[in-house]
Amino acid sequence: MTGGFQIDSCGQNGILPSQWIGKAIEAGVISATLPIPAEQIQPNSLDLRLSSRGYRMRCSFLPGREGLQKKRERFSSYVVDLSDDGFVLETNQVYLFELCESLSLPEGFSARANPKSTTGRLDVFCRVLTEFGQYFDEVPAGYHGKLYLEIVPRSFAIRVRPGDSLAQIRFQVGSAVVTDSEVVEIIDEFQVMTNSAGYPIRSESVRINGGFFMSVDLDSADDFVGYRARKNSHPVDLRAVGQADIKQYWERVYCRKKQPVILEPNEFYILASKELISLPPQFCAEMVPFDAGSGELRTHYAGFFDSGFGYDPEKGRSETASAVVLEVRNQDVPFVIEDGHPLFRVILLRNTEAPNALYGARIGSNYQGQRLRLSKQFSQGIERDDSESRLQTTLDLG
Image (cartoon, rainbow, N blue to C red; front, side):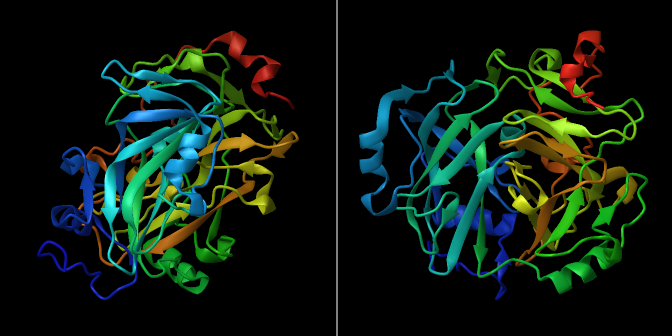
């Protein structure tokens, strides 16, 4: 019992839903230096916000036994004080911020964090730390203490302010992972996967091994299949939604018919999955960010999908089923991908109960029904086709 609220999980193991998060906030299990508005609560997760105090770090670290405060003192270069005017975080520099939110988790209740979708699509690498954490993004069961966020912008510098949210956290009891045998049944029963025409994809057509595999879409009528980040662009203001000019930050990736795309080392790409997914209320999902068996590349920074992603009980799946947008960074050598290349793996997670609100338009979700799409800071209209962007350097390499 905490603050008069019985912290339970309905006797089930799994990811805790939005209504549990709301009650946990009321009970003080989740607290913050600022009031937590309702829109901060997602179907299976809570947005985490930057405080006004941060640090430019000489390196990344895990707190371990020494603890976060002592290591911060050893490795910090200078203090970053955020204001309403914002502060620019430079590319390939490490920053550490205290978050507004703190936790007082009951025994048996743990949490896991991940970047938000917008953060990943901006190629901003961020990870949550705890006071004596041994792992990034993992909050141990029964944790009491503050939360911190390490931020490393990669392709673009970003302007941030107090209260900006770059990461989210989800809470769970026991194991939430759905077994492969259950995945087979769920894919067929709930039509979790569909093709671009809206027809269900049956489990016998899907590779299932520690989750289900999905592939990259390089088949487009106009040969336009993705974006590659430009270098030395202006900073992106996180709050300037729809204001950034796509052409200043991205060049298009083209693919000739029956020819592969070659991903260059240490370049950042936005691509999309060939299959569409639709998550019913009973489940959410997580993408494995790096799977060497599929290639030496990271396919996702923001690998969590709330319940209702690509799903609307009042509409057909052909209208709401969503592609998975891939935030791809290749590693050491040029790597060839082709249409239908099985590039990443998704793990289904069970909820303790269905959330009282699902991902979608009703809660202001930005990426429902998406196909290939950049982050919300970029204007999503059809940009003028610049002939210079169709040079060989934009990966028309066949």
